Image 1 (cartoon, rainbow, N blue to C red):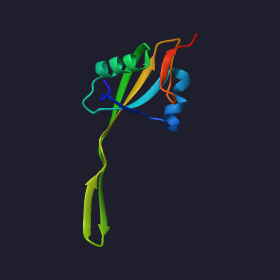
Image 2 (cartoon, one colour):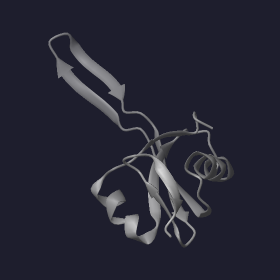
Image 3 (cartoon, rainbow, N blue to C red):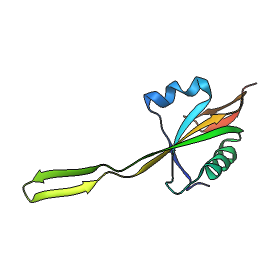
Image 4 (cartoon, rainbow, N blue to C red):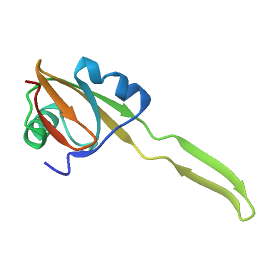
Length: 101
């Protein structure tokens, strides 16, 4: 379970989704939606309504240096947009989850 969810993404776009009960996590590229749902439910003690995933493909980079041409690429990143059921929320900063009652 711990190797499925890498970290929560705290970008400006991700924080705007908070009032909609949606949270964004960086996940393992091999993880599927069912595994992501189970991991979020067990780690944060919440109920998940839906999971959407997006994969950012690596970008190839080329630089000219004193030693010649350096070629490389960025890493593959897979994001999961998790929507919670009503009356549930996750406090990303402290890592606590539960109901809003």
